[in-house]
Length: 280
Image (tube, rainbow, N blue to C red; front, side, top):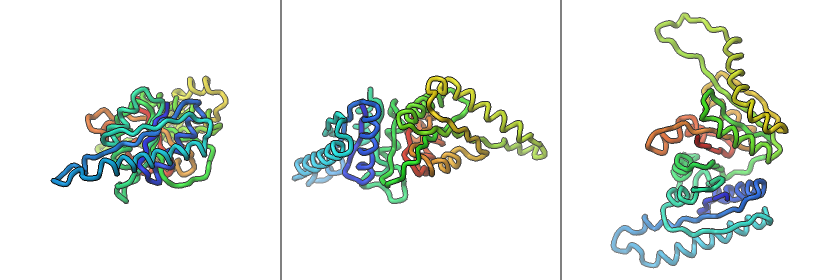
């Protein structure tokens, strides 16, 4: 089952459309979730006067409109709705248990104008154990290409598996991006590197990681991209011509930002297309 969070924002509507398309391609049900967060209204002596009914009606309206959108875009998708009490990030994290995928808008109502990803998207991407797709609320042309970040660690393999699946389901090409940078030796600036040798070694890293997935997905066209650049810059550039950017998450800290890792966190804020974060 795919879970999609809604709040009535433009980004949430885009997330519903994205989730409906994925549910259709995967052949799985879709659950639309609206979280009723009363916490900000439960302060002071006039805390809850008239608000419970208002919040309930608003949530039901948002759910109904989202369900109608799914029926309009993907009429064969099985869709249900949930009206859940609690903070949005916590509700979606709980709903993610056992889900195939969670989809959220990049920034919901009440987000900061300068942030491409709000706290809900960051929290869910940092904690959910299934892939989390963060969708921006703008229309983009279909490019027919999925981009995935690759490195030399086993933790990137779940992201590769998800990216190959998405490319196969969409009939899209898969661009694998392995960004690398020369090490900086403060005490030996005169060191000279054989750039051809380095590039050959980096391409080999990609081929080793791709071998098993390419064999199990023979119809997916792969494009190897091994730029000398910072990973966030390389992936952000590739996202300009992509329908989806897939990254793994290597973070291991206690905070959601650290659970995401610096690359996945940076990509979430700067990518031009929807981003899927796949935790190892």
